[in-house]
Length: 265
Length: 152
Image 1 (cartoon, one colour):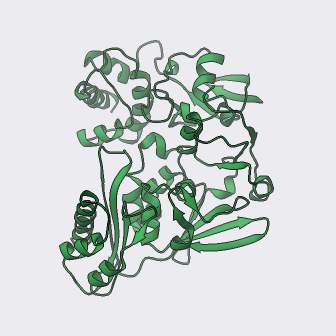
Image 2: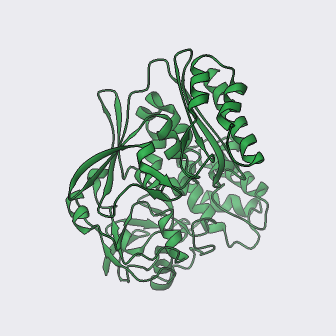
């Protein structure tokens, strides 16, 4: 037995899950990060609330042009979705960097978000897409933006009695071009740096960075320059400005340059 | 906790602690030792099995989670004769010690169903989640491409 003992509950509805949450409990979604941590006994939850039986949390829906992603939607479903590929190709690009196929069949979109690993791709892509994160608790519901949700390494603003239930991605602006670039030691390994770009040439641009801090970060100076038509290398240099560490700074500059070039191509 | 599932087409029952990993349930309770356990934290891919047809790592899933579901392990792959993928591994010398092989096979079988004519690059990406410390992968890639050809 690798993990420490825990009490196990597998609610079938969101209401039942909300009733079970608490200080001593952890939510088990795909388990591709939590279970390894439990195998190492870095994580020793007293109670595990397995939400995998809540089918109502697994969906990808077009809602008046916005994409609604149920928190339990598998990464593989995101990867295979034509709806996603057509409207938000950045998400398909980014999800292909998440682990390996055997990880993505179990791993969930909501789990990636709630785990808040600074090396995770989906939070960065969702940050670039201005996603909204819908959260429920017995006290009610609330909606967070990326800058309010991601607090620090592996830390979100979610309270122990709160469950992330849905991620809403607004319609991509007309004419938007998107690209994701990352650097990892080998394909599927934890990313060391990365960049997500959503660009409407000569109008607006979003640049979100992976590896520039403990959470996904929007490079606002670079975004303004990109919206005004700056060249990819210049946008990259602005995005990397202030990033700690020579190597990390060089990686960010280059990856933003690549993502910008791809978006413009 | 009591669980009822289907493993390799046969109904099975078990009585497990919630913390029992699926890999341990398969090996210790069901004695299906073809599923190997390597890193036990979801990196090496040796323990890959299929749950409801999808490849998953059985060391980062709990046995209680297969209740009501269908699991397939490497023991189900050969049907009297070796599966074309197994035969291709044999012929291309795509294994030496064989420890990682079951995981490769269970990952690649659904991959070939989805990608009947994969490029070499696609094959390399498909097997990136499985570590082999003997062959250096060249022979494995060769075997997968040969198996794909035969399965088409």
